[in-house]
Image (cartoon, rainbow, N blue to C red; front, side, top):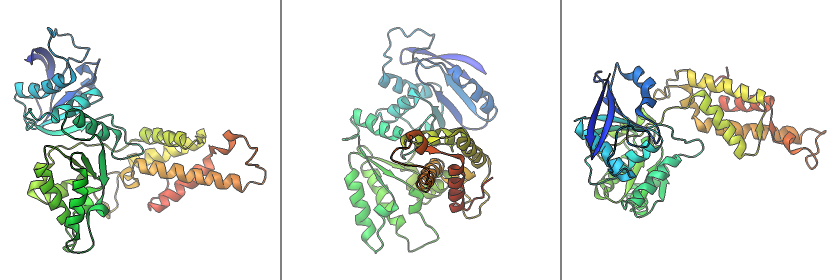
Length: 373
């Protein structure tokens, strides 16, 4: 690994470069008040297979003088793209975190910049515990609205049922209506791979995609369209039509939850539901969560899902378990003749016990056709 320096838009940017590896180049973009050293451990793991370029961006912890150069958000965003050009990097995977993610998205929304050298975008530290799209998608809409690209910061969420009609000729008008309502704003298509069913010649999902593709081309300067789905099905969808991939060139990948994530999500849902998970119950949940996240999926009916946590639905699994455990607790309290719900201590009647959790896990895993460890 070598340490070098390049001058971009009036600022000397120090960076390390492994300059080795046969895979695509990875460029890291950190947040404020940190340096590129934040990624040292990651680079040590990836350096053998990828060329890793790790700049220390002028975001508060840099040591190189800036000489009065513009360090505002938009200028810094442009500097990221210009840095890629200065090093003549191509097919770059940009990995950004914290404020760095917002700067990269700002750069992608700048119509004056050439983003063709960016092949992939990975944003880390993105929360999507309860709702999808995650809050970061709303921030993207707000950024594009602030930049004058969108007329409104709001977004519309649709899925297959909102786009595909059961009768011939209905899908065109139904999809067109949804797109028209989103013009000047952002359209989020959830479970987008459900629109592509190659094994059913009579399915009208492909017609919806044709309408979306034309609209995306005609309104590429004033409307944002995002599609969501698991990676493998999304790749098949994008490969179904040669024009799709070029109209949706940027991919944001959200990794599956790990055991600690699921436990944190469980505690978040419990807090929002005004219940408390007793330590033994949380420990039992953590055991199941770790098992889901460490066990490969071998189910032949869902080959695209790598881990059991993906089969279970990541955050949706947690929400379902906490909701079911809460119902179990209410039923337990209601059937206990020694408990007067009118005078009982609030902390006692809002407690999820180990038995409540065990029963909830059993029900949810059974519905998923999974056996509890």
